[in-house]
Length: 388
Image 1 (cartoon, rainbow, N blue to C red):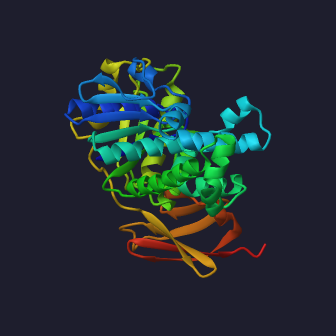
Image 2: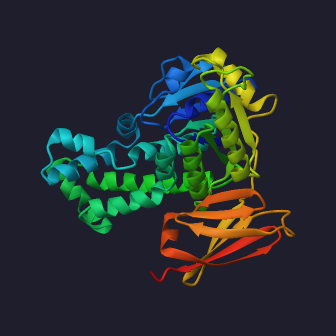
Image 3: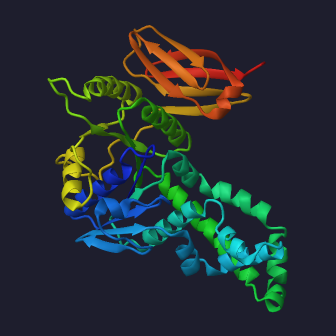
């Protein structure tokens, strides 16, 4: 099975690109599921077809699904839901509010992982396309197992062995399946860790960033790229969507067309050697299978959208005692002069008349750049704790 996750800043058209990719793969004979994990579902709008909490057939070889966290909990994790309801009721929370709180923080994302684990185990699909939430929520999804474990240890005022020992007694008194719910919770963690390992395998999972040629969108894409690399996930392409065609005559969009050329150049410099797929604006709102087919053809032309387009980390972060070393791949520049500076949360690399801006993890704000060295093709930048 292949898994391809699409993410990007809200409004860049990631749902359209995800749906178009799924449709193109299905047309090439791959049994495909396109799955929306964004709470603000728009996948059904893009496909122009109603979707539910279970897979719905769209065309031959293509199913669609929009996740519903409460549906998922009731169907597959009922004991855990009852456990959470009972915990909140013990703490004096009103019934209606307890029902809302029974969905753990991050459970929307967790349900996506658990559905994926189910599909991966059953091996019903050749390809799963994930129309993910905007980048911030996507990072929450991909770091979920550790975060959820921390939250649950804070939420439960009792120890695991106590639950298992007293579970039957509590169940007889209150009717709450506490011990079964806790076992279900532990089973959920095992599945989360399993699917996270699958996500970390570049032979199975790829992440594709969707962006528009606009300054704020590009900045967020750069930050997302840094963190996805930091967490060990393979980004195999960036898709530049809604590129306006150049016009020889003056128009309302003439200034925008000039600026987008500059931003496309920035994307090419900043994200190399990632493949950059460019999608022209169709000049109309995209929904329905006919227009999605056009977008799929514009994005991938005659190639196979399921292929791994890139599988190499262009940088890494290594811990060395009380310091860190960031290594960035810069091939074929051994005889060129360049400078490296740290400005806020950015690492600025100036090479001839070209500049590469790399967003650093937030913890780097507590470190200052100590030195850097170059050994083809790797630039090594050393950081030490700031004395300020």
